[in-house]
Amino acid sequence: MINANYIVGHYDIAFVVLDTLRYDVARDALRAGRTPNLAAILPNGQWEMRHTPGNFTYAAHQAFFAGYLPTPALPGRHPRLFAVRFPGSGTTTPETYVFDTPDIVSGLAKAGYHTLCIGGVNFFDKQSPLGQVLPGYFAESHWSPDMGVSGRRSTEFQVRLAADRLDETPPGRRMFLFLNISAIHPPNHFFLPGAKEDNLQTHTAALAYVDQHLPTLFAALRRRGPSLLIICSDHGTTYGEDGYTGHRLSHPIVWNVPYAELILPGAMR
Image 1 (cartoon, rainbow, N blue to C red):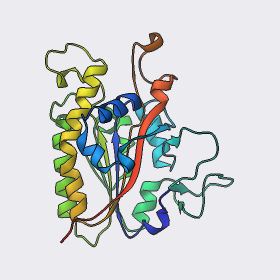
Image 2: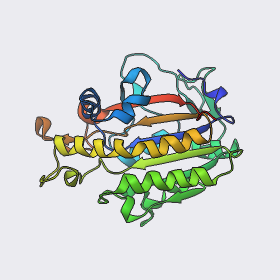
Image 3: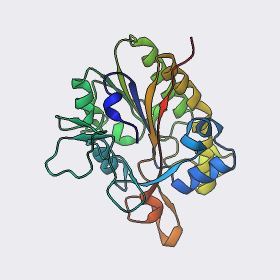
């Protein structure tokens, strides 16, 4: 586990959620060479399977922002990177950075970070009172239809905006970037030519599309120096398994998510 106490205040932090990405699809796409850019940065070149704290976007992100990231899919108590101070917590250790705030976003702001949200799925669209809750945690937030679930170039627009804002922020100001990638969330059939409906193949094609554009983000982070990168899914989704379709339901395919945390080194100068 990374010691978050050495990170906060010294490194930028980027938290990238590949919304709705299934663990089995992420694993198999990696093995098949469909996600070379992710493969190049993941620890040991592979995903870790974890359990999400929520079976749909809103629930999972409320837990994430309270410091409850996906948990290793093994029995036992697992220490956390970040936590908000809470009496009786059994998962904070000397390596956990503990905030005296109600959420980690305001905690990082209190520690001197500029907090930036680039939204994707509708819980970040700011088009309704509910859609304003999650981006409302951040000092700066962005969303547009082109970056939403129906945008055929959504990831391209999202990472370009993220890279621009990283480049425009003075290097001495630490950044907490949160990026909710929308492309894998239904509908995703348009990422596979000829497909008329969403399925495992279009889910994989959407992930491959996302992978193509992630180097723009990684390069922008590297230009600012080393950063802590957390990249994971918030939940999976079903395509007919055991009679289930979609998510916001309790099925292993929904609960099992890919996860990685790593130090992304700065660019050589």
